[in-house]
Length: 154
Image 1: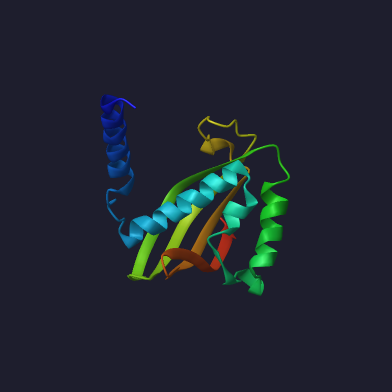
Image 2: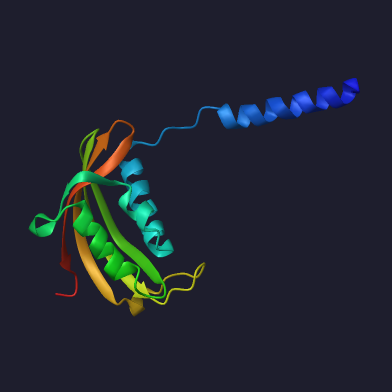
């Protein structure tokens, strides 16, 4: 093999490894929680049930004592049955009570018939919910451990 080709291949390999292995700036805990909420919104719009439930702790407790399996049934019946769903989150408040614990309050508007790649029109919301949740960090992951909701239209 030509020395020049080997040199170019090594230079490319070093450049790729530098980009991949270079330390990334770690997000602050509040930003990590906000990113978690954004990931759940994206998963809901994609109707990816596994991704929607991944950040929900196995010991999750919701209204009326529902657990993760009941939450899965609710997600399935509400999100998976329509053609498409869009989620608009105009309000999100994250309160860090410690580096490993946060309270999240937000309003979530659910819009039916969303066209992938198109913006959500909040004026066409089919449902609006005020959701309050408790999130804890377990190792390097954040998990929803408790949540409550109320109809924002009431």
